[in-house]
Length: 428
Image (tube, rainbow, N blue to C red; front, side):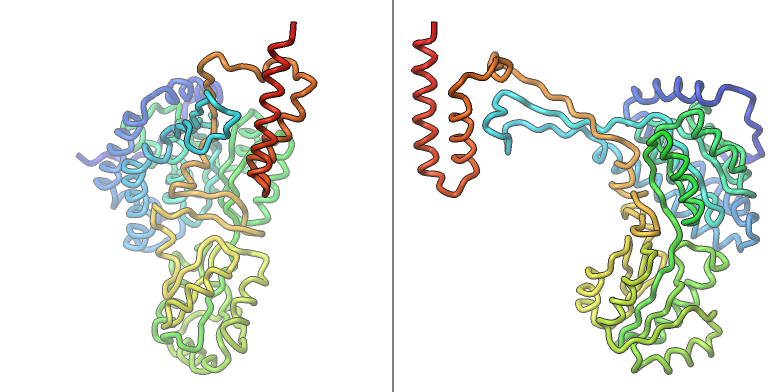
């Protein structure tokens, strides 16, 4: 049955208090119960795909077909990925005797993933449904409550998503849609949040970071890109032209990982530029280089490092060069689309930000490690005051465990142990 997506007005309430109370309950909810809501939401997204696409398209007057494949479909796939993978990613990890230091005998550990609590998601304007919704879902599945601050002109998109989440069974207090203003984000941070997920320009990201620094609030910053497309001498130029035409026109060119720089080997530059002119591909920053090595060097010279693409018929060579590019994502013989795979982590380095969204790593970002150590038995000698001969015993053990002349060190350790036992027997 199709849900009717109508504008929703948030009632007056103490948002932070309600969210924290709901999060306390939610964090104790088994993950299988959380994922049942995600599954129901995915079904609602599918049933209302045309409506969601229409609402998202209205923000920048884009074709509905484009929004179906660039926002609605990857959002549904992200839900499915969470359903299948979140239990594995967030499961507690137990550490017993394997690899345990000898002096930790009797101790076992459990590394748990604990939710931060209240997460503020500051969404972008270019993909107003897909990006903030995926970030919110990752935070929710990890056990957090979410405050979502939409970009100007996109609040109706966020409200439509939140309504479907409520119909899927989510407590409304767990997902609050804030006003669009910058003040709303600043006010939320001032009132206290436990982590911020920001997607936007590098300049706005620095402003947010300055505010977060006052309270040492952790964050993920997914900032501007200036992605380079490296065209090697052996590239399929017809494919390059098609890819650049797609990348520069998708979403009206408003994609953070869209191509901004064309780094092309000199020997094929004129041919490629002529083809781009015939295809009416918008002109971008073009850099001619001597060879493939120089192309990679130029790509690494940029301050921004969100993504890059390499075009070459020699995939093995392209993979070798890809490993040398310091950027969050490298695509070989393609552009933009593979970055939407829900299994893949996404994030930038240098001026393009830090932290990760999506994939295993993005889900883990919504939690912090919480370690529980259990000591069994009665071996608690480390709680006693050290004796005079303990230093020699410890020195011998360190040499035996980690030194190069281990045989001699073990003999020394054995002697130190004998001395220790004799001293203990003669001690009154």
